[in-house]
Image 1: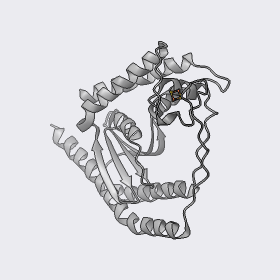
Image 2 (image 1 turned 180 degrees about the vertical axis):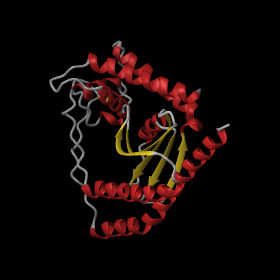
Image 3 (image 1 turned 90 degrees about the horizontal axis):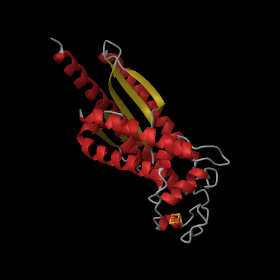
Image 4 (image 1 turned 90 degrees about the vertical axis):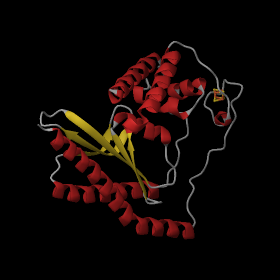
Length: 263
Ligand code: SF4
């Protein structure tokens, strides 16, 4: 019941975001519902959020050293290979997709379990982090869209399983606040919330706006690059094993439950 409420609110947020996106238009075209959801998460200031949505090509794009992206793709590839090989032994019927675009989030790996009637029973997501940062807003969206999120931090070897039902109360409250804020903006009730984010804000008409120097691409020193790659390669096998074991264990418990539920 609680998870159903979560899904309802998720659909409600998407619909409120669609309505707001339709109200906004700019020379670069209208933002879509996902743009609205992502941008509102980026800033507590309504005025900055609207400015970002109306001028989507103005904000300087972050320069990312493709080393991090390559590592991410590599971990995903290794994990899927190992997981599918082990899954094959268990004979548990699941469907798998990489870079799956859901309503409000893209899953690195998504595993779906369907019943004999073809109806969706359970959705599991794997989120891979190859840097030290963890985007909690993204985790929240992943938990709203999936029954379970397995977070894999390859640099530290952490693997954690987050069951959405465990955090349902918090997720429902958070989604309700997001729906309320989105509707408030559609009705034109906008608040300026100044803070550190005023540095580099695209809303130059606001008296709080401050300029920010655009950062250059940061590269690792030779010794840091070596130690990062060394740690990554040494940690990866045990992290892959932990992540695969975690997923198989979750799927096995699901399969056992399904068998036990049969008359
Ligand atoms: S400058 Fe600050 S207060 Fe003004 S719109 Fe931007 S973020 Fe909001």
